[in-house]
Length: 399
Image (cartoon, rainbow, N blue to C red; front, side):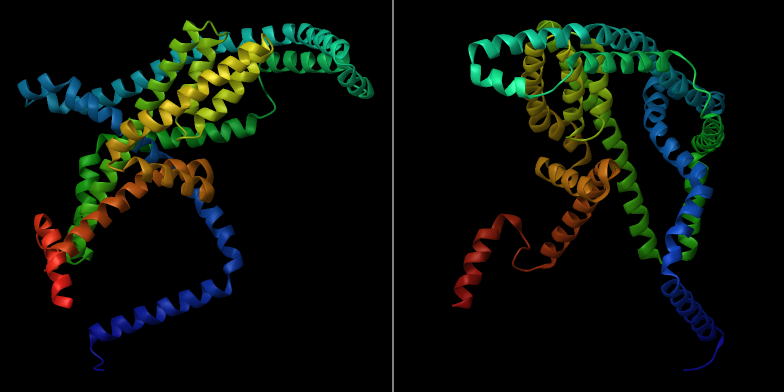
C-alpha cells in the first residue's frame, strides 16, 4: 500500500475506530450511564424537535389551506408575516382546545368523584341486601358468604375517605413537588423555544441539512437518504393526523351511543376515550375498564350494558375504522397495522406502538419498491400481465 495522504488518513480513521470499539467493549457497563447522561442533556432539544414535528402537522394545514387566498393574492408583503402568524394561530388553536377540554372535564371529574364517594356506602348496603336475598334463596351460597369475614362498613368508609382525599387533591394545590415542577417548567420552556425556532426557519434548516448531506455523501447515497427522509416525514405526519382523526371519531360515536342509551358520565368517559384512543388498538380497552368502574357505583347492570356496548364499538373501530383511517393514511394494509402494534407493544410498550406503525410503513414502502425493482429486472417477471404465461413457459422449459 502506498503511503500517500489519502491512505494515511484512512489508516488513522481505521485505527481510531478500532480504539473506540475496543473501549466500548471494555466499558459496556457504562453505556446505560452515558446514555442517561446524554439523554438528560439533550432532553430539551429532543422534546423541541418532537414538538416542532407534531405542531408542523397543524401549522402546515393552517399555512397552506386556511391562508390559501392570501398566499395567491399577496406575494410580496404577506410572506414576511405569514409564518409568525401561522405559528401563533397554531398555538392558539391547541391551547384553546386544551382549555376547553379542561373547563369541561375538571368540574365533571370533581362532581364524579363527589358522587362516587356519596354512592359508595349505599352501593355496599344494596350489595349486602342482594347477598342476603341470594343467601335466603340458595342456602349453600349463604353458608359460603357467612364463612367470609368481610367488614363491609369499614371497606365503604375506607373507599369514601380515599375518594374525598382524591377530590381535595384535584381541587387543592400540591406544594410537595416544587423542585420537579420547576425543573419540568424549565425543560418545557426550552423545548418550546427550540420548537418555535425550528418552525420559524424550517426551510432554512432543511436546506442546510441537504447541503451537509450533499457535501459528505456520494450522489447515490444522498439521493437515497433524501428520499427516505421525505417518506418518513410524510408517513409520520399522516400517522399523527390519522390517529387524531380516529380518536375523535371513536369519542364522538361513544358519546352519541351513551346519550342514546342514557349511560351516566357520558361526557367524561367520551373525552377519556378520545385521549386513550391515541394509543393504537388497545388504548380503548383501558377506557372501557375505567368507564365501567365509574358506572358500576350507580348501577351494576348499566355497567354491564356499557361494557357490551363498548366492546361492540371497539370491534367496529378496530376492524373497520382504524385500519381504513390510519392504515390508508400511512399506506400500510390493515393486517400489517395489527402486526406492527403487536410487535411494538411487546418490545417497547406504548411508545413502541406509536412509533412502530409509521416505521413499519416506511419499511413496507421501501421493501415494496425494492421487490418491484428486482422483479422488474427479472426476465421472468418483466411484465406483470404476462406473469402466468411466463411461469407456464418456464415450467415447460425446465421439463
